[in-house]
Length: 304
Image (cartoon, rainbow, N blue to C red; front, side, top):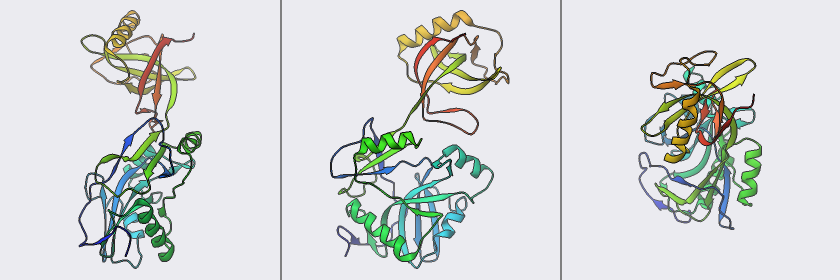
């Protein structure tokens, strides 16, 4: 009998446990820490001969991830695994590369990192502590010979903020810290904590979208040789006062046409000479060269 488990019929889709967002990792011996993957959170169900994969909202994406479903070919009658489907590029997971592969219908580079076990062979494990669930999950891998593209997600009992610093240095998305003794709950709670790595950079402002008192968004570019190419929009990170100050500065450099080498279409945009640059905090840059999860931090004159 697994500690905390109970006999049960196999459930259907289980709403996932979600992590609270924090700026620092929690400390204490009760915490274990995992690399935060940048992919699609999914739930893999094994029910006799049927394998099914559900998204975090419960959509059945088995056909889309049929290679992963087919790779879970082990002598287990019933099981539910929680994990993430990713694509690894340059030794780290990349959501933009995952999207690109799926758009091409290519599943060959997909990997499934399993980090939790919710149900196994007639037993609901959700009330078992995380350490027990992961112990059984690791045993499942070891005893059945599961291998890539199905991968066991390792965790460490270590200083969370030191692990975060190392993860950011390696350009991972961040870490997930989990209370090792907590049960699995289908909600967002402090039992799981996510801390993300963020990057900063300066990008020329090439346009803005107006609102009543200032700006609703800034269009950004980046210099590539003599060209200015589009880097996307930023629409958060300022107060009403700062928004108004940004607008006053940009109104002085309005131009009738976009200064992008390859202009984009936006009927709501007001184009400007790239005389100012926005300091932006962002998570990543997509395969299309666009900033992901960008937040405004400041506006300065662009160096000549």
